[in-house]
Length: 578
Image (cartoon, rainbow, N blue to C red):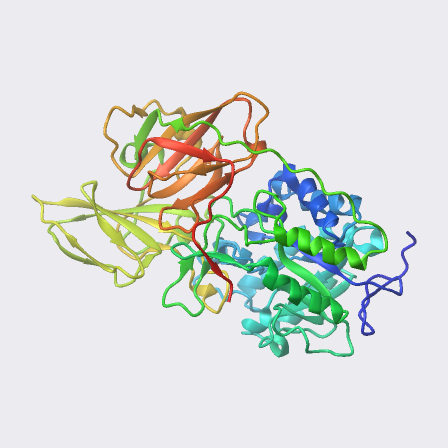
């Protein structure tokens, strides 16, 4: 098409090439979906009657170490934008730098916290210098995909929900200029909830609402859009699975459309928080509570890409806003419940320590972000083992310095757990000096609210720090023991999943295990925890191959020696979204 004028918001309706355009959007995050399934998910979005894709950009994945950038493979944003364009979808890009998204530290890299004076999301020079460096790499990849240059990007969001943070009135103008000065020319948007509308805007940006409750107000002379219509909700470990029923959702979406508003479904397809990337919720709670691994979100398209009743009802509704029939529904992918895997080998944490880097001896407390590893970028995620020597028993008091959860051992014998709620443990008397070990897990950094600057993890005790296991080193180790020996926990457990045909999606079930992490063929599927609600872990078929597939489980406290599989997920007991 001949491109003269991009998306505009000069009247009560959006216009593209001066013709009215209603944005029917859906959020799918490329970093939460296996790349092999990007096309499948976007085709299903289009077949639902949506014309616009929205996605965040996770800074912490694209720059895992300061100055080291990754825009390849699973993180090939340009390929994702190319794909959207090839399918005839418009794109609203939400490049951050902060994204919230129930993602660790709201997408900000943990190495920022090495600076003890760091003030995130402000014009503090330590933060703005890092943003400028990241945007130098990101925006030059985005600019060619703008509408004015023949690409699919019709709008770019300036930061995210800053009205709920609002610590620096110069910050939003800085982010806006950071985009414009690097060549962003499309319509700028901001996104805030009702309370944040007055504080989160930026001159020349179009304020949009994030929630479904307040969609009837603000900027009556401008196009109205619900930038985040929450199609479901996220879940927390130890809680219930949130459900927003199709019967409750459809009347609200219908009303929004009847009012001639645009809408973006957050999420249309949630995907998965693979690895250690899920965030934590602290707002309104006495202590942070971590997000689960699944980001199914009760969205119209399920975690594994299945249609739901919500999908079909929305498709029928959106079809009324198209003059042509919607595309046929893409076929669903077959799934399989593989035969159980019997664990063949084990390697205790204590035996695995020889494969870690040399421990750091410290006289002062060292949080994991300030450990001298990863080219002095610190340890971003996972577990850190702290050890010291004690000369007597007594009461161990964390004084609330454990971030977030610690397994406590004396002479490698489990004593108990320290966390935000349990802050004291009895340490048994021994003969002479004893080694006290705390295996501290970063359960996920808070992703929303005003406590972002305080998300340093680990513990504040004087000790040795051991860190950073290499899976490759463990795999090649000759120290794995057979399962005939009684396991010493925590431990790594290894088995083989044999696939005799084309690999299909599946779900892992671990009813005889307590808490840990699962790796398949070297890929971190994420955390499991018997406190629920999530009872299964999604395994994408493209991450498997014919023949033997290596499965390694790091388990904290117990195992029945079997890994089970299911063809459908189990997200636990549910509760309606309020």
